[in-house]
Amino acid sequence: MTGPLGLDPTQIQEAWALQVRRNREQADQFRDVPERPDFYAPVAGGFKSDPRRTDEPALDTLRSLVIPGESWLDIGAGGGRYALPLALAGARVTALDPSSSMLSVLREAAAEYSVSGVETVQQRWPADGVPVADVAFIAHVSYDIEELGPFLDAMDAHARRLCVAVLLARAPSAAAEPFWPPVHGVARNPLPALTEFLTLLLARGKIFSVWLGERAAVAYPSPEAALGFLRQQLFIEPGGEKDARLVAAMDRAPRTADGRLMLTTEPTPLGVVTWKP
Image (cartoon, rainbow, N blue to C red):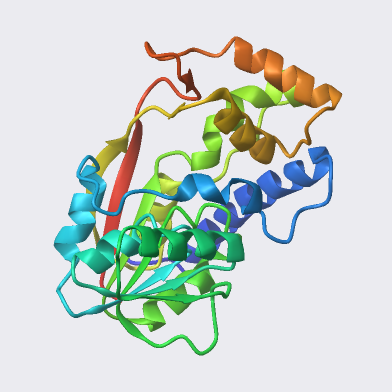
């Protein structure tokens, strides 16, 4: 059955799922070692950020959505990049994430920056026993969710006032895509992102608003930091033949004026999407 704009939600969901599945199957084909139980453990420390930062227009947009005293459910909160600023803006935040290492970073950052009002829950979404909140929120966690329809259904069911999603026009992992051909000999199968997400919402009959901005080109402060991210996204281990190819490809990558390695050279469009549950 088609939606109000003539889009078939089942067909759109299946197209999303196919992209995710192809991306995952390719990772399984080329990975050096079995998948870790906590995928983000090796790089979790790099997700800590200053919750009082003022150089991120998308975050300013999120702060403007906070009604002090309301509850926010941050699904896939990671290291607290948004959960902590939302708490400082007056929200009571439940930060849910399946990664123990990420939640440890969040708690460390909350202590370091003296942020209260954040409760952590280690679970994968959809989750049992999580209370309904005024706002259900996701940021950069939907790209690799194969069954996104049930994920969004649960999100709607846990929001009283608003649902909010932050997505890039290309998934964050896309920064590693140029390194797939020199390391693995094939192009990376991309994940769905902002455009596909908006199409799915339309097919589901959702009326939404979008604030459009951009994320700056990705530059890493040190070669070691970039190497950690790329090894994770290329599914390779240190010391092997593929790792040597990666290091060689990194040597050819562009640098900023101050010497930081650039994984992307152009800003990526970014959207803050809001809809009523």
